[in-house]
Length: 150
Image (tube, rainbow, N blue to C red; front, side, top):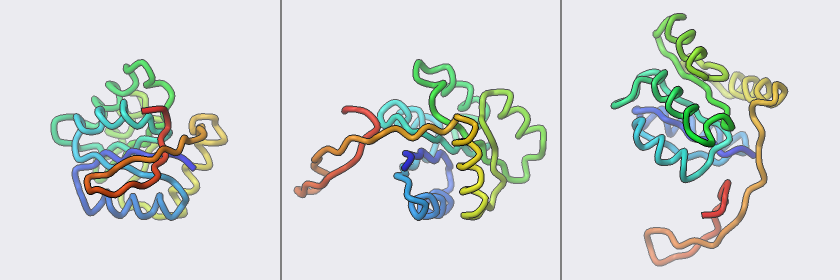
């Protein structure tokens, strides 16, 4: 099981991608812009980051470069998502440090294939998770898994 961060401004796309990835057994969090993605990246330490080409406040390639420049930025596998962007956008993302790319819309089989490729190349390394008892926004308690101690 990998922890995945999806950075995309489209809430319907984030929900669809979250459903797809959770059906493959992964834990997923979403960010609606580049600043939120950077905050979540440091807090959750994901194994995989899926970055949209067009994000408010950050161009996708700039976000990839910023993520790679962070102290722990070499570790996560980064997929770049392009839609009608053309080969130049994908090439720029790969040059900025993305490990692979996806074209919207994508399906379960393609994502499974890309994840298997990333694992076989050694780019996607799923780390063991810690389970902690946490209190959410209500008065209830539940168990959550984290990539690192919080």
